[in-house]
Image (tube, rainbow, N blue to C red; front, top):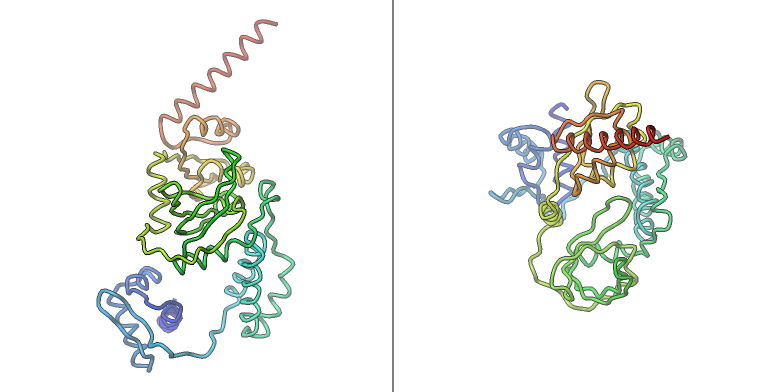
Length: 320
């Protein structure tokens, strides 16, 4: 990216948030803090009213507005792709708000980009998995997000699948995340006196209590990291043949999939698993087209299972 494009992108980034840290700009563009300071000075010299506060970050003077930003073809198609995900994986209220926002975005696109979106609209689809077909988030997502922003205490009626019971409880919402086909709410539960993970589709109703909480809760990212640590998750790295990789596309998320990359003719996949035994038995299904990079304990367990299977089959053969 040349300097003119980078400075323009920094201006857009400054308009996107109330305060932007210099380190965030540096990380985004892979540049030094010295270069960030120089680019921001260029914007100031161009007449952009930027406020810089040491240890806090940069912000643009409240009320200052620039003409609408034009989007590239790639950015326009990224919006359309995101729209497909929102339509399929959220709730009716979120879909409606996103659709309204997309009308505004389309309104400022150039004719060429509008035509492009119309041409490819029917060529991008996001399909629900079998596990998601019956999921109903009951328009809860927007209510939860608003309550998180307002620090509002909510009263939930919740169906717990393990006990098959309905309970009512007051909660302080911390954040929501999407995993393995379902939306989850992390919240501090007054009834249990601890943090709990509520699946959004199992929330029967949400009622405002009119109360505001002042408790300092961990960030969602910090909570999830702590939860993974407490569960004593083990890291597994395997490599699978490209010929079978597509068959693992949906299954991998149920085994703690984290990331993947191409290594020669194979795909190297990283997992965090709570059950090495369960992972070993899942691996056996496609083990003839894969190899274990780490840990050694998984290699040993898979070898033991394979030997036990071979021994059992040999005994059955000899008994005939």
